[in-house]
Image 1: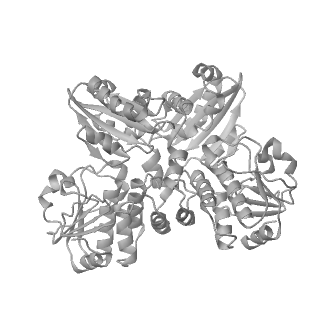
Image 2: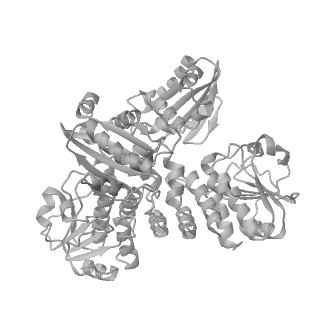
Length: 316
Length: 316
């Protein structure tokens, strides 16, 4: 059941002993939503804990350092930034039919929770929580709450770069900055600083991009053998597709990453008007207009050939 | 003479036939200020033209395409984002003692104009112009004016990333976005898309960074011979210093670029608490706490040795 901001606020005021669930492979928005909401509830005098199926990445440590899990049995389960119960991951899957309230911004939210507060126009779940906090006057934010909510908004919008950024996104950021959050420091951490391994992987990929169709398409591929040769962990090779669209002429960028001997994961990004989800659907995949993916069970040469053939229909 | 927003508005209302001067090697803020203010004045029924000593880069073409220079003799000269008359460049140097109004955000503004509206807390000259426009109700912005002012604010703050970004910066962005400016498109152009030459140069520099003092310092050097070998124009080797601080452990990043046989330009960036302007002052240079520079007239080896010795005092 879709509920209003007023009803969500009433739910939070009238209950206690909250378990807040984030999605697996956690990002800045789900972590910011989790610890931000936890801070809000605790400041309202409630008991609340945050849970995640996967370890929280170190780069987000300023949001969870100093956090202490409280000993209590849950009476209310809230999921934040979780569009689908599958995304709760292994450890939290026991709660998948027990979510009392889901706060989210994904239009694809499956409505699995007893109550859903979803605002698809919001750039981040943290923007929804900020609106709930401020419009319904749940409590006065402190520095930590403001820092968590700002971080979720900043990370989900590529620091206010993406189309999802609206005037309301900027206004939320402006209000949250009034709580001494040191936004510049957060942004350096989120958007500038990289690990040595990550820099090496990005260098590797950038050096291996091939351009096609008068530089309107870019394709990069990386095999298991090549990954092993770099000595870098496989998870450093995630989330690299945006590198393929850096060249100003590129409209579609593709990255092909080997997963098993005859299994290749393809990620596509559109920097123009091409709907890459439609392209990926042809190969049994899917996604969003600007970012989509599919999987090939064949050789690298054949996967690349099929992708280039599909692109050639659009770009020649 | 430092004047108020009210006085600046009165000046603009009471005069006509404006020449608007931008600084040389123009960036997004001076171009956005120039064409934004020109749009405002023309919408107020005034005659106004924009001038720059140097050609306007193609990446900013959405701000100046369709602009037409009007035939008139100037009766009022306004400089925007020009902290020092030296920055007007060769062609506009004839106006250096004739500026009637300077609108700026640099604390270092020399006060060379008859009237100066400078707000050092503003993140961009475009933010000052936005405040002037809105507070003093000069006119109602249109899409083009809003796009120019947004672009100046976004480019001077690294898309709202830098410490200079304040709540007022975000509020200006929020208001400007209400005029159909397609901010996402502007941001892709400003912050994501690069030319092939630029990508190649960045790759080259990233591949040549050396790390020192437990990865707390990074030094990259590029010689005239190396630049020639890449076949890329020398101006593509400008503005690369921020690449040296991408590694998360780096506190000071240095780039050394050969200008002549025995002349090396050094740019330093601080990603931590080090004041690099103090470091550069030792070598006869200067700048800001986080970004500074100096020049060595010696060999590359010696320049590097001197820089590393200065850094070793701080980092060992």
